[in-house]
Length: 634
Image 1 (tube, rainbow, N blue to C red):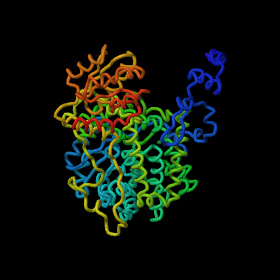
Image 2: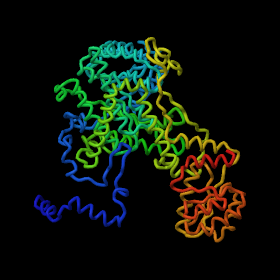
Image 3: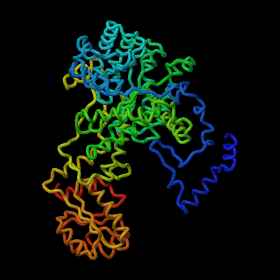
Image 4: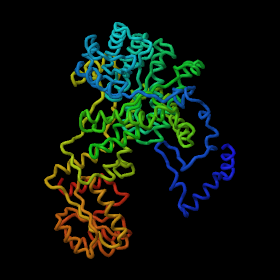
């Protein structure tokens, strides 16, 4: 058999990179290689259409092994097990306990409890955790920042009373004042004084992390991948500085930090992001700890990945399942420690039991059927992913250094630079969605023509600490000693929100506008433009009517008016518009809005004849549809 293998390989001569490029140039038939096949990322680097082993020659990280410093290939050596986590808002301890016990029997092995500050008490925690065995379940808690130490003390006492093996317990308490500053706009720097007491309170729970970097907030605010990466690193370094200056050893401080990161739909880039994050974090910890970090778990980055809310949609919401599934796959293949899948219905309602079940099963499918948990670092050795890991690491490191040179993450948060930079990215992405340079499947591209909202409306789900659903005075009001005034806050407006507002306003109109495709002339061009126009206009909630074609423009206009059209879109070829557009416009005679599908060379002549409306691939779809609604009185 080995001889056959050797013979098989020797029969083929491996082509060189230049030979591949020569072949591609032939196939492109003169088209520009850089424009057609090279992808320029938002992160500022180019991605080639193919990579070869020679492209990795200078990358040192590819020589490391799983479970070894700098952990680019993951913290684990023998498997890729991760915790399947689900969030529970614990407003009633008994009800939350019943829900936790139920989902623990359905595949979940990590729970995130959200507890109001007023409820942090021994009785509440005892009821909440009744029947849950923490040595088999990862338990995570989020409460008011000023109650975190109290909660930690209660948990330690409770676990001791129950004789649980403290050294085996895993979990976290979400203490992260910096995220409150960015999400709530309040300077709560004095709250940082509780960081050291919190770590001391948990000293017997070595498996509990309590200082959190919630960069998922940046992801949900539309940050680019390199921004979340670079800022998360600077954020973590800031906490290392705070803790070591307070007298906590660098090694102990690093062991207590947990990263809660977002994961978006950019599949390969997200895999690379987590790999690059571990690589860079290990190097940062080494600067604090010294060479001890080379052989100590303190340099391992622990990540809980949350699928993004930013790209979720109210309309065609089942597409959210496709988005979150690829995101979950990215996180799993990138060897994260736990994953939270955001239920598909979160944009418009408190997730239902059905939506939560589907979210759990999305992870269980990857474990039980795809066996993603069996193999360590599946992405390792992929030329493309190794290149993306290195490129993202370089861009993330540049941003990290820029923040450090500006005084550190806290200083940049307090002067508003972090929030302003992320909000600027959000604005760019909204502008890109408006012009369809960033597609939102089911919203600005291929919308469901017949879907109605059926009472669904965008649901705001504010971050922050709560007392009976209201802001907790202890945590959300500026404490005594706070510095400065209000800070800018992250804009968490989802990418699809403006299109949803537009479509919902159309639904409220007395009559649903009808857009009629007047297809005429060249068969291929009229069909292509009719399809484009239907997708373009249906994004506003218009009823679109496609047609096989008309022999004359008069026949088409008459059919449109008979169908009750509010908008008539002429769909033909550029050359034929000079013949058909003006006669159709004049025959329509203002009885409906007239639109030309395309940007023909004769556009100026058509405008001179009084035609105002054109839709094409370079149109700003959102602004155009808003203008049409205004003309229609909506």
